[in-house]
Length: 150
Image (tube, rainbow, N blue to C red; front, side, top):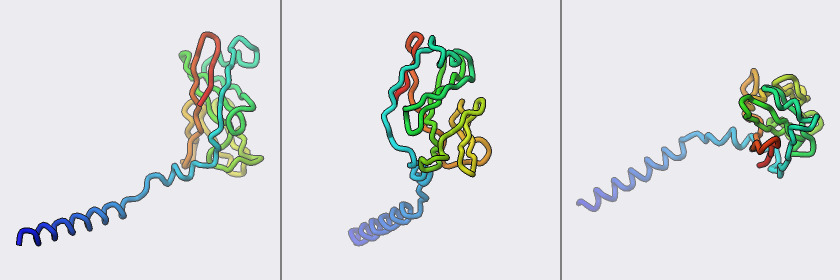
């Protein structure tokens, strides 16, 4: 009698576990939608003493660095010797002629018809919630050099 009860309980637990597992919504949907950008190697050293990068000495200023990432990178001074670097391709579009992000103050704007806008301080979209934020790269300050990598 006891073994029949144990078998019935095991079957109920298995069915219950299967129901719970199959009814859970997959939270990876947004991650799966964020696969437009390639995982490319990023390795850049920016000397802050050079004129092309000197504006990074001031808080909230950004510079565009070509030939890195998917479409170049944007490096932003977020204050107190802290910097962030972002891929310059809109993560919500497959790379194409319009997906390059254009600098506009402290934000970047996609050239595609939807004109997605992103904050260079946080990497998040302005306005409408989008599945993907900007792809970020690691930034290390070493003396007067910023080292950007992934």
